[in-house]
Picture 1 (spheres, rainbow, N blue to C red):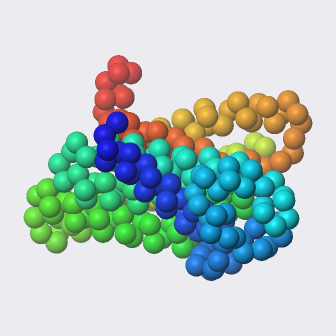
Picture 2 (cartoon, rainbow, N blue to C red):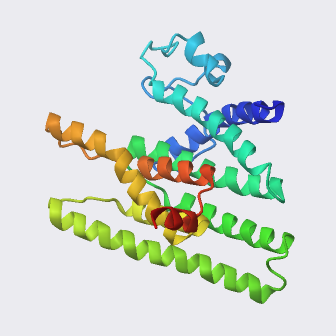
Length: 266
């Protein structure tokens, strides 16, 4: 592990409270810049309580005011964000135009982190986040296309944008069909509308073919938990967004090419 990858690990950890704030606030009150407060007693967090990772141990996993136990998810997401940032640096720094690709990758991965947080807490994926992330990522991909000379004029850029939008539409249709079939089979909502729209963002970044693989991997990851819930006869709905995000992170950071997968199968 290089010094720079360690640096990006700490950058991820430092940014993680901001992602947690967006993920927990955007779906409900839209005020992502309000001061951080305890989920239980609503008291404003002190400086010590805001320090990523360390605060969990310094406060012994409890709120300093009401002594309510703090969910370990906060700690896991803070560490997980640091690990993802470090891995992203390790993957993209070896490529041509590494810092542009790193910026694209970190924005995409950060969006998935925020989506996961909101979906776990509220089972909601904000349209605002999906739209803003999609527009910025498309613009950055066009910029990268000009930098590496894959695009030479605005007509080429227009075609790239159209192809990305086609991928998104194809994925939307596929997910919508899966949702409707699932609703009919299980006699209840099988997928949320946010999951369907989330896959459009993933398709813009990875293409619809890789996005289909994302669905299969996400279903495989979710299977043990679904079996466990069925064993417990739990009626609770499970958000599918976190599994889609986990599968996407795995494929995106592994940089697996779809044609390589087909060659392996054949």
